[in-house]
Image (cartoon, rainbow, N blue to C red; front, top):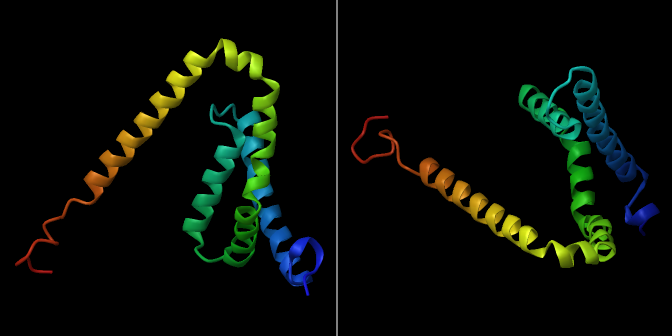
Length: 137
């Protein structure tokens, strides 16, 4: 039997809430650093970078709560697109007048991300001298 919000039990709900609290806490730290330290990077990006550094420093320390929260967020991902859809609907007039710059930006950013991804994959997939046949390991 499912409990509150589709979670199988209270412990699972607490794991999701604690993971969410960790994410919001790192975002808050990032926001504080952004405002107080005049860092030109947005607070949420700084917070996620700090979370990455923490997870690299202490691997596995936050695995259970963040795993539960990320699973729940991925299951609810469709709901996160509702505000963006409403924003598109409410700005139809702006889209009608500015569709060419928007289209150029979408196509340009897509091509740029494809190029960067292909370049990185090409560079990272090249064999090193250790991978070559006959090399001593």
